Length: 311
Image (tube, rainbow, N blue to C red):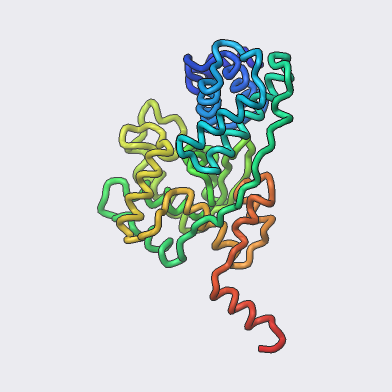
């Protein structure tokens, strides 16, 4: 199976300068574990940095042990990396070393000596209902890409999709008559998402009025296209969102993932069940969704007035 997949995937995901042991591990992550291309690329970057710090060549250093890992962590700290970035590096290193030991390329089970730090979970920042309304209303009907940009913003807020999921959907993934779309999340896990009427109308207008004029030989069945007819990528969407955030006069540091946070936060604030929100977001672990269980002071007062017996 790997021999059939690698020739088409490796040039895009794995640099020719990546050492052979890391390449084999990345192939394992993509082919066997089904991790997304962006995740594999992040692992590649982290592991190449580790490889440089431990002095690896084209094979595993024969004497590699926990002191090499400790030295790498110290060097990362000296470079000013945040605690969360170091923790991510450490998780990648632990998986990599476990893989090498299981394959007989590393004598010591160094991975068993590595303890991952427990991190404080930050409450995701979300903007208010009013600010979301201003953001969704920011595209100007007189502009060339009004229908596309409006459809993107409406769909991000209507579904809580990640940007990578939004840019990968095709025309075949959507059923606007019924009101749902199919997206492929992390680990290539498929989920079905309902779409509200404003998003259905926005996407329908875009597909009917603008997309045919953008379509080219390279478009395929991709929904969201650039000026040249190519599939929009994550950078395009990030710039698009920032453009309308500034136009809407929103001072918060809003990016596409912020809209995903708003989707989850606003659903829960409106009384949605946590388990349902977990399914909609595509979280494998409920604890990931629980970080959205925060409420503002006004909601706390409302709940207290409504339910406390001495009000």
